[in-house]
Length: 82
Image (tube, rainbow, N blue to C red):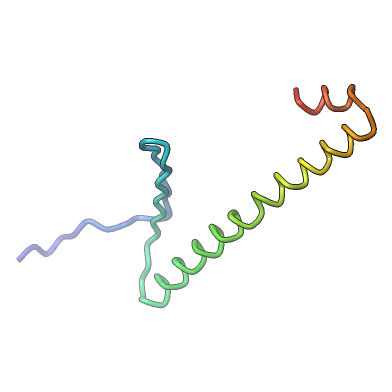
């Protein structure tokens, strides 16, 4: 039986895109099951916050764009597109 094992040294993350699909990997050393569960919950919360905030940022940008169009402020629109 093997007595030496390879394990995780610390935190790491990776991303790969395959056929327009994005795959994310997060890894962290955990001494206990509670540490592992806490890490997984933290990653889940982070991803959920990204999913919630990204559409809100897009919506805010669309609202600003629409206001500028209604006001006829083309110079501001052109600057915001650059």
